Length: 418
Image (tube, rainbow, N blue to C red; front, side, top):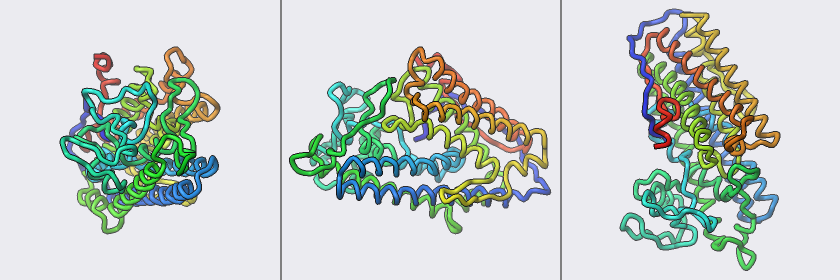
């Protein structure tokens, strides 16, 4: 989901030609990495589908755990594709279908008794499609007696134009696998029981058959959406064609994606904002406590784009002429600086990731008074901001146009509390 930003970092210059590095080849590498990343996302989503089918066929602690592991594995390649947002309109127009967040989970299923429920901002926040086969949305009666991908996509997702009415994508599936995380900034993720998928008298949460239908439909929809983006970056795809059409515009798109994800989106909206608010609802993978990995692989995706190298889920490497090559021939010192900044950010993200894996989950890091957690998050935020300054210098060195997303949390912090 593209989040609103108050400030844009803008650089506007004219673009010359460079001799040694072929920009078309750099863009070809960029498109090849995109195709591979989305194909890996599709492959892991198909593995998730198999695990979901096994859960529905035979609900148990083991099949639920396997479905959760499959979801976690699916996030690894997908998060590395997020550097393709912001600079590529085709990706931006599509991305909300698969990775929109945060979501008002009461739209989909049962929630705790202390859930806020309908509000002036979202009267559908507790609609509970799973429990209600007939609902009214924006004055229109919706037949939800059969839960299908089409129902989710066309009638429920972003109901009444409200962005938090997220009914599809990774996070809807995450909620259906983990349930709400009711632990606040204390230890623990969501703890949905496998019996939420057991039909008959042992069903918990009610409507177990419809919950199963929803999970299957949402997973099928995710696969269809990823198939669309794999095709878009294929040899005859429109995203590949768009980025190759104008070499200077294509290189600008690469830098725009790097800078916007690094600064406004990740450093600002996904990290600094949650820390300012000490709010676990601002963590990206909030039901599963997987946010540390989402942040890590977002950072890795930025580095992949610059270096022109991506390691696939099967261990093979897609690589070729890169932005780094292009910058090195123009300003070798700047290329060294950019690579060092990316390394520093990844080191900070690695430290944060390891801390989460060793017992301090990301939502615990957000807790008021957790100075160690704050330091871990801020080291990554500072690294992301610092590398953005180097990305700005790359834009200038290549004499291109680029505009980066901003964030109130970075550009106008007092506005966050108004």
